[in-house]
Length: 524
Image (cartoon, rainbow, N blue to C red):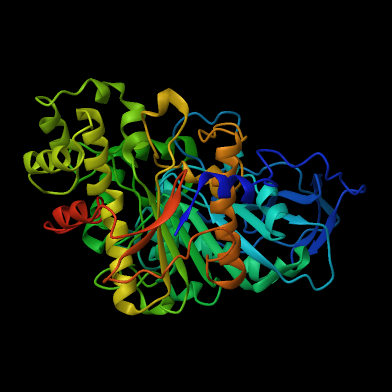
């Protein structure tokens, strides 16, 4: 069964765009709620209560590299009308505050209704384990909260050297968890959600994690962490997989490389100004030739197994999961940052693929396959398709197969709906599904368009997410029947102008790249 553009448009006719409907007037007095840590006063975004910058943990500068502590209770009423600080990181802050006092979150929910028992959706941002925050216009939660009458949470946590510098083998038992400090922040945030969901009308027994790119990878790790058991009940990951993590050899070598680069020992790292500490982001990785240090999770007592190797984590086998990727992932990961990709010829394509495809397969054979399957594609598009299939998508296939072998409830999607900028040459690229699931097609930075087709696509995806959050199954509404993923059919929902289910889409690509073992970059 297919879902046509007409059906999508009808389904999305009432979809809120990038801002909250002006017809939903704010009820009046500014909203307040009582939390376990004290009282907060937020503001109205249409008919949705908005609370920004609520601290869930104490200032991490006081416990650099150590597990987080809950925030100390405050007196009086705390203002919650501005985003809190993001974790210090490289790149342009673009007006966003950054601080080690970054354990903050944001909440959107409709006005108070007694015993509402709303599903809670907690979004974990992307940026790998290195950058990002929960304050993007694309992830503003008011539209999703209003559309589904749910509680939406976004958050910040420790990243890069602050969240994943593994010092246990150097500094001793007190720092045994430093390689996963950022993940332990997420556990603390989920404990906060458990303890405070009811204050916003949320059901602490119905928490859905959703995240894109690095956010999805972090969710994969949480699925294997004993400390996170029982804190969430469904997961929806978008272009974010974590098959393996660093072992003690790789993590220890990276810690030594950082200290050599900075010329500092552990004692100095604990107290030096954070701006100086961020010099670690320029350190060269001891394992990945020509790359800067990989920041990511580590095998330790907090994360005792690889998330999806050799199998899916038994700890979360009962948890319903949706996972998806975009067809042209690297349209943004590589091509948008390097316009020379569109100057590739059939003669120059092989050398460039050797550098960027990651999977260790014969590039000439890969090119021949794509030219046979898709004879209309020029060299640049073959590059984008091959690097997409050999990198992120390969990891999703592995995760989906592991869940299928486990018999765990799993649904798989692929986003084919094309981006609008630059004549659409980047296709359905990495991150394009964020404004669609958040129903934020009019938000700054959305490349989905904001016409009827875009709003209809957002309706299809956001409503599937909302149904999944409510009942643990994305089926319903105007969508075609979406079967659970298994190894026989490999049914996949193809979100596009005409949304449909396909069995084993890109099967020949899957089999081709499956000839080589997959090693997640940075985890060796």
